[in-house]
Amino acid sequence: MTTVLGAINKFEQCVLNISAINICNQESYVGQQMRQKYNQWMGETDQTVYNPWLDTHQFTIYLPHPDQEYENITLEAGLTKGYNVEVQPVDNPSQLPYRIPRGAHFVVVLRQKGLDSDFKIAGTGIFIRPLGVLSLDLIADLDRGEYQSITIKHPIIRDYPEGWEDKLNLFLKGEISSEELPQVVRYVDQAFNEDYRQPSWHDIYLAATGFAGF
Image 1 (tube, rainbow, N blue to C red):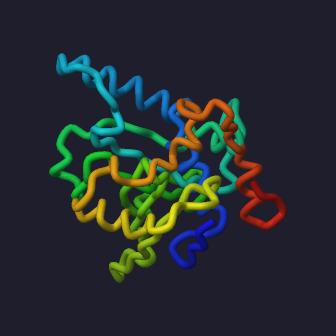
Image 2: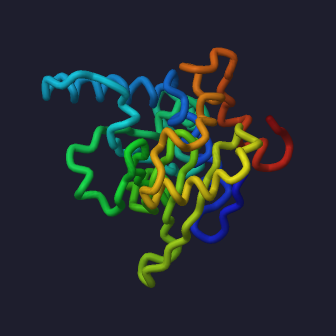
C-alpha cells in the first residue's frame, strides 16, 4: 500500500484504495453504473455501443469524514459497495485539465473536512484501467498552490510486472497505447475473473494498520 504523507491521512488513503478496487471491478456498483450511463449516453447519440473503457469518463471520489453517519446504511457498508464514487461520460475531453490518453479516465477527489459539511476539491488525476492505478495530484496547501503527486496501485495486486512504471510513463506521454500496458486489472475484475472476491472496507482498513493482509 502506497504511503502518502501530508496531503491525506490514513483513513482517506484507505478510502482511495477501496475506491480503486470498486472502479476496477466491472461487476461492482460503480462498474454497473458506468455501463448503464454509457449505454444511455450512446443511445442519445444513436451510436453503436462498444467498450466504455475506451471512451473518457470522469470518476468523482468522495472522501467522507470518518464519523459521518447516513440514513439506512453505515459508512463502512457504503464504502465497501463504492457508493462514494460517481461516474459520468465526458462529452468534451479537450476541456479537461489533463490530456487523457485513450483507455484512461479523469478523476476528481472531493473531501469532507467536518461532520455534515460540504465536499470541497482535494485533487485531480487520471485512472489508468489496465494497471488499476490512480495517478493523482492532491492539494497539500491550496493557498500556496502546493500539490503532492502520488501513484496509488491496486492494493490487491501485489506483484506488478517488471518495468510497469516505465510503460505507464510512455502511455501518459502518448508513446504507447493502453493495449500495450500490462492488463493486470483482469485479475481483480469479476467480469474476467469469476474467482475474485472483493475485500470489504474492514479488510482494507485492517490491512492498512498492519493487522491483516491479502
